[in-house]
Length: 113
Image 1 (cartoon, rainbow, N blue to C red):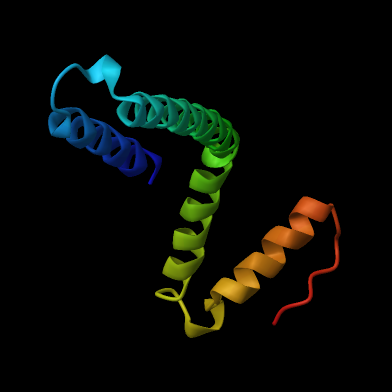
Image 2 (tube, one colour):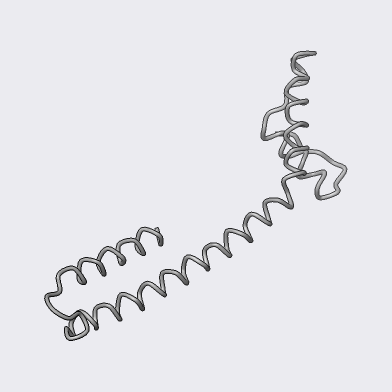
């Protein structure tokens, strides 16, 4: 979104420059417009940099839990495969999440849903 806004500001700047007749620096309206566009462009670039920082933090947080999520995925597939042994071994996603929640809390009593 910020990149689109920056591109729009660049296009607007080019249109104003191309519409000038004579010396660009003699046209106060164009100079003021250019200064305004430069200021807005700097703000947009700052917003882009800030969003890149936030995305890096999000990716870092995700990477911390990725190994755990992979283990959980394999366990869920294992539980799902147990149904092939006997229908009594059927685990829903909700029951898997209950088991996982109980294990993470360190509890010993499981309540199945």
